[in-house]
Length: 319
Length: 267
Ligand SMILES: Nc1ncnc2c1ncn2[C@@H]1O[C@H](COP(=O)(O)OP(=O)(O)OP(=O)(O)O)[C@@H](O)[C@H]1O
Ligand SMILES: Nc1ncnc2c1ncn2[C@@H]1O[C@H](COP(=O)(O)OP(=O)(O)OP(=O)(O)O)[C@@H](O)[C@H]1O
Ligand SMILES: [Mg+2]
Ligand SMILES: [Mg+2]
View 1 (cartoon, rainbow over the protein chains, first blue to last red):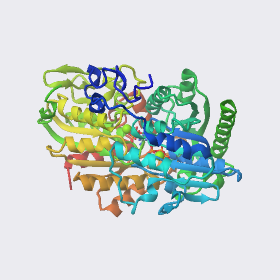
View 2: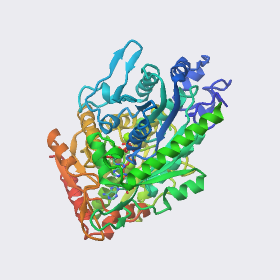
View 3: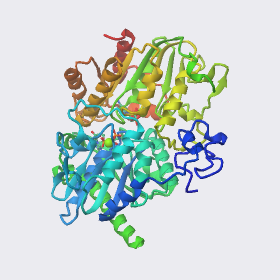
């Protein structure tokens, strides 16, 4: 059913069908008039251009969650720091949270601007082998709001993939906003020819979060996006004074562990709540180097190792 | 449903409050629910409109996950949280067949449904309609502001957590409010300080003071801090009424003050 868009209404007859734009399922679909006009629908030429551009990028990883504020951006940044600690690897982070970009601050790049080079926009470098692209670098002031509807956001994402001078990369990590909407559909569609290794899904332990994450997993399955695994963030809190643990976000339905069992997805690890993580993020430093011995760092490192292993085995099975 | 746009189901709604934040997971839905429960305790009739279409949280927080909405002549009948019908809720959850269904929609479809939510829910008489929103400044937010244009909105309640990562996004949301002419009722700092239940030591798990600081910088009223309280997250998980169950807690007092500030209206 290649011609049924992933965001189509139920019972969509398909864009190439005789009934396209005319069946009852087409009522209210934003594409109804395009389909009804009978214009032969060409695939977006950008998809092929992006494939060319991405031919020098070995691994592409999405960081996703249905739920807001669970630590997607924090994880994306630390995954990048962890991978880039191997100096022989080239790593980049692409932030496609267009309305709420957090990556510039978390990676210590607030106030930086992108530069135009002969071959496109140059990303901003944290270290020699770690580069970043975010809409945050295109805004003039911390008050600037990006009040954009879907199509403009999609256009920006296309530009980020096609017009940024990424160079040769071992890993491209994509940080996303919460949800299953324009940004998510666009990144998956634009990278469809270039292929994505898979998605890391972030959640917190409570059901309020898991219920949204299950929707995100449904989305991944719908668009055939492989799932590398799930990270449970903010699992427990150890009081620095009495050393006893508290479940601030209680896993009332069994947490990520039970969800992963039920849905047959790997659980990559659990990261505890640690006030130093928030502090490192606010200061734009890597928590992994700020607090190398903390339990959260150990958890992050194990997860990063699993992601590496997934990617290398993935590459083998691909060739 | 034809002519929906012209229906006026909000004519008997006295006040409209929008809960906003540029940042995800800061407690917008939590504040929405606790504000509704606090206003109800003060004798008000409250409606909640949940326009987070991809990640609706309110039904679970009120223990209404498995409910359906029905049609009547005036439109959709909202789901009531109690027999006395003091809290009414409309959410996309009630329209899904399966709880795990993903709503994979681009902007125009989201906009269409939000407009329909605004015109076609038969709220009846309400003292307050509280709108819970997803994070950001995009389709849902624009659809809401457009859809409510002909009504007078009390204003927006901005929720943040103390960290700079969060207040930075909320700062952009303030610009959104100013650009779209949405009045700002104030800023609430949520998840502010955690008191260890074992030793009473207070830890600033997500830092401290960022919300108040932001309010100052942006010239917006500061409406107080809500502590990080495991009893609150627990109540929300099980859809219990925190406001009825924990009247002794500091968290209760913080929400009461918030509700009073909302009742007092714009400064
Ligand atoms: N394990 C942790 N312990 C303490 N603080 C954490 C932890 N993980 C993340 N944080 C903090 O929680 C806040 C939310 O994290 P983050 O911004 O990464 O979430 P997000 O999922 O990207 O949010 P959004 O949905 O808004 O994009 C940040 O201030 C971050 O520093
Ligand atoms: N003060 C608090 N103390 C303890 N837990 C809290 C507090 N505020 C919110 N939570 C919990 O944090 C989680 C996130 O809160 P909530 O879902 O209300 O955020 P949100 O801003 O609506 O998120 P989203 O951006 O995904 O819509 C929930 O599980 C909630 O129960
Ligand atoms: Mg983020
Ligand atoms: Mg919410």
